[in-house]
Each structure stands twice: as structure tokens, then as C-alpha cells.
Image 1 (spheres, rainbow, N blue to C red):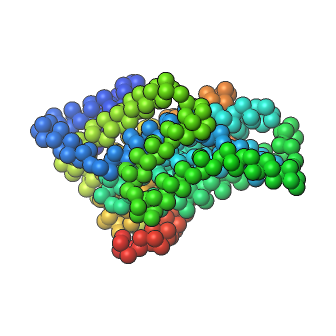
Image 2 (image 1 turned 90 degrees about the vertical axis):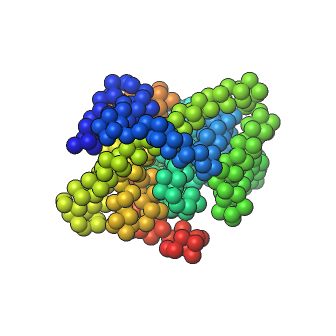
Image 3 (image 1 turned 30 degrees about the horizontal axis):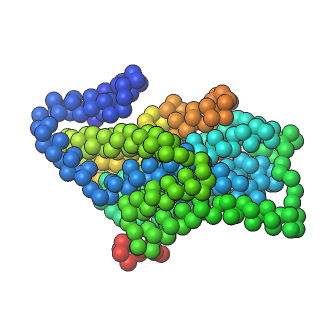
Length: 436
């Protein structure tokens, strides 16, 4: 009953337009009153949990993503990838998907990926007469790749909440992210296969193509080096996720200001201010939901959920199906941070009881929350993409539905029922350390 009332309070406040942190605060006030919990002890516990080096990576990656977005670093990536696949049917849509995956490997943010890559490709797609609703759908559905392709701020948060390896969580989403990139590219090309109005890039052969390739590569090298530094540093063990995030900020500033020259001191100051506000809101949410998670645990809600699900079925695969449904619905009505912070304390004890690896669970959460970002009624990426491409969100929904059915759903099924999809890479690189 406490869980039901807590969710009702939370939903009413969210749907009433109350800011997310205050909505969660309302749920906390109710639970404090019902359970008679000590609010000062809650503040102390929350402060202790948030005061960890691991979480420093989140504001750092948010800031790096903001600098790269304002510095138009994504433009060089788009041009470089276009030289390979720009002339394919629906090539620019495929370029959008692939570039979003690469950009996600730099900044770890879905919103920054959509804002940067979407604003770059939208004018080009309009100029080349792409159906704008399909173009917007491709950008929208590719944006969550920034949540899957490491480094991902979402995976850092998951690792922190489950007290497991950040690197292993990163690795668990690499193969699902690659599969999703391929499927979204195929679906985008399929939807555009018969459109005869599209104007493709001029065909280049021989030395003309080589010279153009050389020119675009030179321009893209500073941007392409960034994921190599970040991911190479993390995977080699030279840097932690927090240290690599700091390096990402330090590297992105001179690249945006002096290489691509799209960012000046005034713009940098504005960017730091804006991203600091975003990071502050995110960390405030983390602190608030730490309190809510503790109260939910005190109320025995994770155990109640576990018992309720086990009464329906004790089959692991049926329970995984129910968990997926729960996560998709949660992702549809909440932003990704709120959905993760609320769902993990409730579901993780059940996952451990079923003997499911936390790294498989992190990939499963990543795909589900990515779907939630593009599925109404919340669907922040859907509405942001429609605004960037200047089209009606209702027109974007049909191609988005195709991409959900033939892109996200197959990946979700694979991650849920074929553990090797998410566990093979962590086993290969860190198997002994993780005991996998």
C-alpha cells in the first residue's frame, strides 16, 4: 500500500508540472510521516552516499558534452563518416545514426548527442530533400546510443548504485549498442529506399575521393582522437572513469576553441554555467533519490515487490519480462535519471535473488530507459528532435514506431534472454576480476 500511495503522489506531482526534485521530495515527506523516520539521519546518509569520487565523472562528462555541443565538434564527425556512406540510399540518415554512436562514445549524453548531431544534419537533410519526419525519427532514435555506447553517465550511476565495476558496466553495453546502431541504420535505409526526391552526394572516384577523404580526415582527427583517449584510458586501466571525464573536459576546451574555432571565451563561460546547472540538478536528484531509496528499503518495498512478482511466477524469464514492462512504463513517464534512481533500489534485490548478473541488468536497464526517452507521453528525445527538425511530433511517431519494433525490441530481447550479448565482453576483458 505504501508503494502504491508513494507512486500516486509522485505521478500526481509530476503530471501537475512540479519540478522533478520537488516531486520526489513530496514522496519523501509522505514516507517520513508514515514511517516516522529521522530526516536528519536521511540527510546524513544521502550526503555520505553522494560524497564519492565515482560520481565526479557525471558532472565532468556533462560538461564535456556541453562544450563539444557548443563547439560543433560533431560537424567534423558527420563530414568524415559521410565520405564512406553518404551516397548509400538513405545515406545521410545512416550517417546520423553512426555519428550519434561515435559522439556518444565521446560525451556519454543522449541529449547532448541529439542537440549536437541533430542541429548539424537537419539543414543538410532539408537541403537534400529527405522526408523530414523520417530524418527526425532517425536522429531521435539514435540519440539514446549516447546512453549505451560508453562512457555513459547512466552506466556510471548504475554502477554506483549497485556497488559494482564501472568499467564492466561500460563493457556490458558495447555489443548491445553496436547491434542497435546496425539495426537503426538498416531500418532508416529501408524507410527511405523508394524515395526518389532525395539528392545524394556527388559521386567521387579515384584521386578526387582520396583527396576529399584526406581533407575530411585531417579535419576529423581531433574529434576522433577524443574517444580513443577516453576509452583507451579507461579500458587500459591507466585512468578511472572520473579521471577520463576530467581529461575529456580538458581536451575538449582547446579543440573547440582553437582547432574548430566555434567557441570563444564568452561562449565557454556560458557553456560552463549552463552545464554546471544541469550537473547540479542531476546531483541534486541523486541526493534526493538516495533518501527515497533508503525510505523504500525501510518500508520493505523491495521485498514486497519481489514477493508479488514471485507469486505471479517463479520462472526467471517470465519475471524478466515483467521487469522489462515495468522499466518501459517507468521510462515513458519519467526522465532517464529519475527512472534509474527509482527503479534500481526496488529491482536490484530481485535481480540478485534470481542470480542474474548486475552487468546484464545494467545493459537491460540501459536499453529500456533508452526506449523510454523516445516513447510518449514523456519522450523528451522525440519532442526535442521534432523541434530541431521543425516538424510535428505526431508525424515523427510512425517511423519511430518502426525503429522501436525492428531496432530496440530485438536488442531488448537479446539482452534479456541471451546473457552473452551483455556479458561476453566483460568476461573477456575482466572475467577473473569479476568472477564471471
